[in-house]
Image: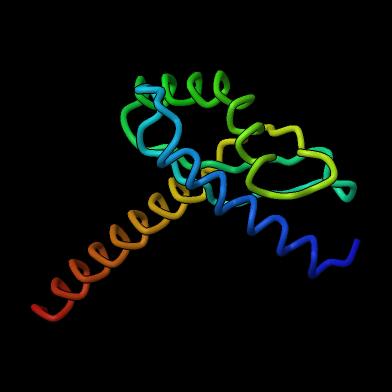
Length: 125
């Protein structure tokens, strides 16, 4: 399968899974979920769905359990919306890139604050 077609299918799956989670899934455990990426196997039989979860640790655990329990429903809905020979088996994976980038931003702000504080002391002498 061509790389361009694979990327288009992955992007379409990402959009449709996001819509399904936002509009159709009625599980109250699933709160702030963002589908960040979808990676498919070359034969499109398996898809890894990367999600970012927001909330407290307890809310994130409940949301993760909710995602696991409704994966069959999401797969069925995806199969009816995206016309493929085989509907891929969905595997959810936690995407921690947003938390990592927030941590890096926090460190950079801390460094900037410390350097600003040090410069002020040098100017007084």
